[in-house]
Image 1 (cartoon, rainbow, N blue to C red):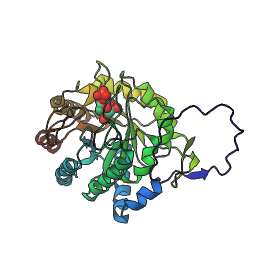
Image 2: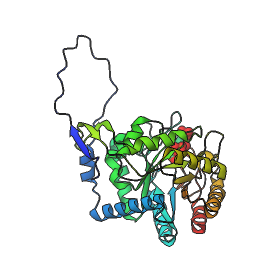
Image 3: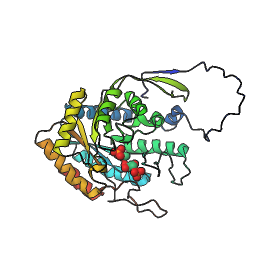
Image 4: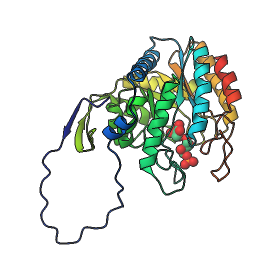
Length: 356
Ligand SMILES: O=C[C@H](O)[C@H](O)COP(=O)(O)O
Ligand SMILES: C=C(OP(=O)(O)O)C(=O)O
C-alpha cells in the first residue's frame, strides 16, 4: 500500500473540561469503512500493483523527456455508469496497444466532480444520483471499478478532490489531476506532496498560470498535514514532497491558452520558477469553450507546435465517451453519453488517437 513516509497516530487526546453550554449541533455523520478495510475487501492483486508502478514510471519518463512518446489522458468527464465505463475501457485498451509505440494512453476514470455551485458530485458521492448521497456505496463501487479497469491493462487518471478519498483509492491511480478550482488550495498542495504518482495542476478558472506554478513549488516540498492513518485514526501525516508535478493548460473564462504564445509564456513562467517545464494541454474545458467537436482541431494545433520543436509539450487531455455530447441527468438516460461536460464521441476519438 502506498502510504506517505511517516504516519503517526495521536495517542493522547487531552481530556476536555466539562462543557457548561450544550454543544452546538453538528452535521449528521454516517460511519464509513476505514481505508484499510476497503482495501482488504477489494484488494489490488500484486501483478496490477506492478503494472501501475510501471505506468507511473513511464509517465515520469515522458514528463522528464526520457521517453519521447506523447502522454494522452482521455476518457469521460465523469463516470456515472460502470458498464459503459468498462465498455469504453475495453475499446481504449485495444487502441492503447495499437498506438503504444508513439502514445501512452491513460484513461480518465473521474469519480469526483468539482462543481461551480451545486450539482451531482460523482459516483463516489452519490452512485445512484438520488441527491441523497451514499459515500459508503460510492467508495465500494469506485474502488471496484478502478480495479476492473486496471484489469484491462490501462493506466488510470483521476481528479483528487477530497484528500480523504485518495486514502481509499491512490494505489490504483497512475496519474492524478488537481482541478482548476482547487489548484490554489493549500490542502490539495499538501495532498499532492504525499501522492505516489505524477500529478498535473490545472491553471486557475480565470486562466491564471501562476497559481499552478506556486502549487508545483509547494507540492515539491514536504509538509505536515492533518489526516487519518490506514486504520482510520486521526494522524499527523508527514509527506516527503512530490517531484513529479506539471502544468495542465485548460483555458479560463473567455480565454484559451493552447496557442504558441500562451504555451511559450507558460513555459517561461515555469522555467523562471525552477519547476518542470513539461506541459499538458487540456483540449476540453475552456480551451474548447465546452464544444467537444473542437477538441481534435485543438489537439492538432498543439501537436503542430510540438512537431515544430516545442518539446515542453508532453501531453494532451481529451474528454471522450462512447457518444458525443452531453445530456441532463434524467430517468431515461442515453447509454454512453456524459451527464457532466460534453465529450467527444468514440468514433471521433479513435480517429484522433490513431492520427497521433
Ligand atoms: O469538468 C467538469 C466541469 O467543468 C466541472 O466539474 C464544473 O462543472 P459545473 O460548472 O457544471 O458545476
Ligand atoms: C473538472 C475538470 O477540469 P477543470 O478543473 O479544468 O475544470 C475535469 O478535468 O474534469
